[in-house]
Image 1: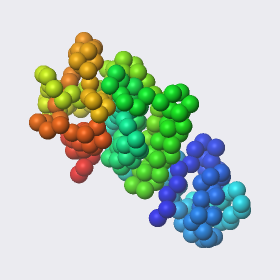
Image 2: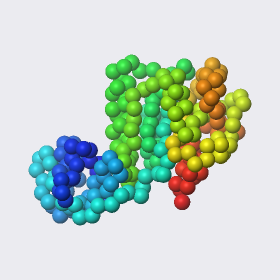
Image 3: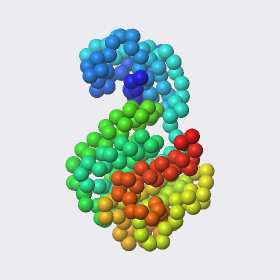
Image 4: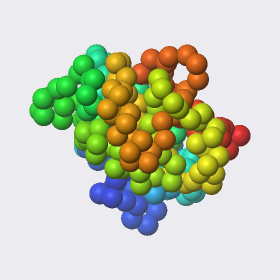
Length: 247
C-alpha cells in the first residue's frame, strides 16, 4: 500500500488529513490516485494513519482516517552513521541502504583523506538530494519515520557527537582494534549507537590517534578490507542483529 510522510503542517484535524505540495501532486498526478483509494500516512512520531481519499484538487489531497496505530517498523535503538564524503554517487547508495537497515540519522563528515571535498553550495545541493533519497527509501521499505541527513561536520566535530552516544566507535582497518562484539558487550543495553566510516583512503594515523585520545574505541570489521560503501551496511546489520531488531 502506498505510504507518505506528513509533517506538522499536515497534522490530522480530527479524522481528516490534508496532504499538500509535492506529495499531493505525486499522489494525484504521478500515481493517478482515485477517490476511495487507501494510503498509509505517517507522522514524525511514528504514528501510522490508514486513510481513504475523499477528494483531490491540483495542490491538495483530502483524506479521512480509517485507523490509527503506532508503527512497529522502527528499531528499538537509535543508530547514527557518521560517513566520510566519498567519490561519485557512492553516498547516494550509502544513504539508501542505511535507511533500509534502520539508521536514525546520517551525518556527512569531511576527513583528511576525503577525495570529494565540494564547496559550500555544492555540498548543500548534495545534502538536499540525500534527504530526498532518504525519504524515498523510507517510503519504499515502510519505515515509520524519515531518517535525518544533517549538514556536514569535520572529523573532530563528529568525534564529539559520537562520544555522546551510548555506544560509539570508529571503524579502522589497521593497527590495534577491538572486535565489534566486544564493543557491543561493553555497552550492553545501549539505546543509541554512533559510528564513523572513513573515505576510500581510510583514516590517517593522526585521526586514529585522535579517536583513541577521545576515549572512542577503534573497531575491527574483520580480516578483510571493506569498501567504504560496504562497511556501513556491515555495521548496521551487526547492530540490528545484536540489539534484537532482526527477529
